[in-house]
Amino acid sequence: MLTLNQKIKNRIYRLLLCGTAALLLNVYGASAQPLQWQQTNGPLGGEIQCFAVNGTTLFAGTYGVDVFRSTNNGENWTAVKLGFNVFSLMVSNSILFAGTEGRGVFRSTDNGVTWTTLGLGLNNGSVFSLASNGTALFAGTDDRGIFRSTDNGTTWTAVNTGLSSKFIHSLAVSSTAIFAGTVDSGIFRSTDNGTTWTAVNTGLSSKFIHSLAVSSTAIFAGTVDGGVFRSTDNGTTWTAVNTGLESKFILSLLVSGTTLFAGTSEGVFQSDNSGTSWRMVNTGLTYKSILSLAVSGTTLFAGTDGGGVFRAALSGSTSVKEQSEPSLNFTPFPNPFSDQTTLEYDLSTSQHVRIAIFSPLGQLLFTLADEWQQAGRHSLPLDMNGFASGAYIARLQAGTTTQTSLLRLVR
Image 1 (cartoon, rainbow, N blue to C red):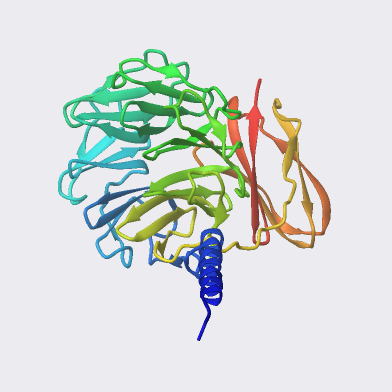
Image 2 (image 1 turned 45 degrees about the vertical axis):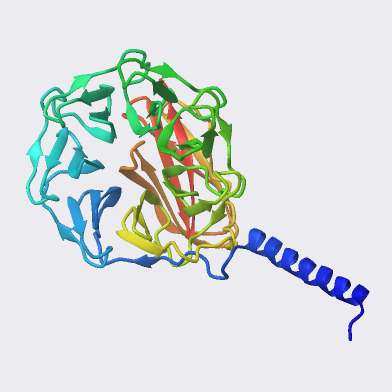
């Protein structure tokens, strides 16, 4: 029979074992299986710029191959024949809205079967972002700022008071404010439903805001060259949260419950602690440029550049760390530059190299190199003569590794 001291010792031992197990679960995750991606059956041939979810129906807006709809969790896709390139999608009160290239906003009340043009007031401009706040709809445009509609999109009015930049790439709505991300002037905030705007850039080291997302406790901004920034005071100040984030070219952000996902030029990263730390979750993801993210039910969807839509079950996502890819040290010099600069990079082994130049919206402008190259340090001249001043993106693909660099053309 065990003595009282032996019983106490055994109980303490069991408690220590339980504590150790809990600690291991906290550090390494509750399951041994990482997020597993599977390529769906489409839409192929273009860039998946955006998603929208309406009940059990998932929509994908593309640049190059129209709008597609899936009613079986991405198993199959059907074109809904809008007929234009789509930069943004939104569902508000079960109505689907599409922001297009050069054609303004379209509306569908029958899940994409038919569409109505909503150009009045927008003058058929390009709409890169859409958001709703109560009964008000907002459209972020390429060079004319933000438009607001209070009649379900039938008419639109410009609401640009306080905006120093009118190229609006992203919009997000919190419980108390609306946020607008620009391509050159950072973030603006409105607390009066878009009537006036104020710059809120304290702590931001990058002013090219590609994506915005809102959780119950924070606001997140994804930048082109500075990674992810977080604000816990309604946008008044921002802090970089990039630990474990191996790409600082953030193309998309998504909040799902207490989990934050970032779509980057090098795949998908996941954070379970509000961005404090990140881990790569690319298993099965064969296309690494993630332009858009969405959740439908318990499935995460990723829209890629050229590879269609991938999906992954959210259950079982853990902190198993994947092997990181080697750095290519891809840098332009000088930068900023006028007309000409040089792209420099390292190759650890001989491999196929492709270097392409993109617009700020991710549209391919031209390919600079597409060839087999030897290992070592490389320098490649880049001539941007004939292009307007502004921000551009250079992307280097060497084997299975992809890295990007922001180019600043100034004249």
